Length: 334
Image (cartoon, rainbow, N blue to C red; front, top):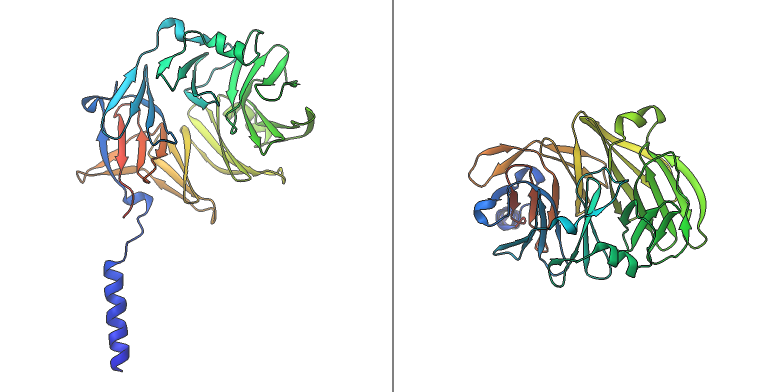
């Protein structure tokens, strides 16, 4: 009996001192905005580099944050390279040559990450990759390879074959799985799958029913996690989140919402999806969805805000981009 009492007391003491799991809804956020050195309060995208620095794009500048202070650079008018086929919002890519590419509404800028300056001519960088034809759009894949779309088709900086794309549809996104599987994502939800080693088309399928094509044709955002691809497609004041497993080639609609969804982040098998009202979490193991509509601030107040992008730093801290309130930061769970 006495042993049982001591065991219960030990268990109770362990429960009091053991770290507690913190749910997404229990995060407490701090504000970083123009008063802290951010160039402006309209934060669009954010990513964490391998060295731990944060790169944040605002409505006009690219910002760098080293954990203590912000620095930012302004593009000049000559830094914008035209992409007549791109109609989407802010989209970031990295390549193997220490470049960061930022697409937005028919243009792209190229930043040299070593010097933290915009390159003198994006055209010259494309030429170094061997791209000399008129470029209609450009993409980056998961291998940090650059792709360009021309009148001849789609060509990669690594594989020199040219993939013929659909001329009647707008190519919005692409993804490369492994070394040989290329997937092209079109405006109407159609996906074409190619064997990169041969340049041949293997199959095609749809991310959602054809009758929904016009509803979600405006923008696309992809996230590759293992052998699963997630896609956000936005229409006018509506969005759809779909997924499929590579190899099975069967798609599934995860959710549809009457407002925009913006971007992805992944941590500990949880997918975070920013949206017009806070963010969603999707457990990739249990497939459970949860909505965090209001953020709990460090001051104790609740904040209702849109979220343009989410990332996690190397320590596990959560960073959130908002349209008018700058950056929000939540410390990692203890």
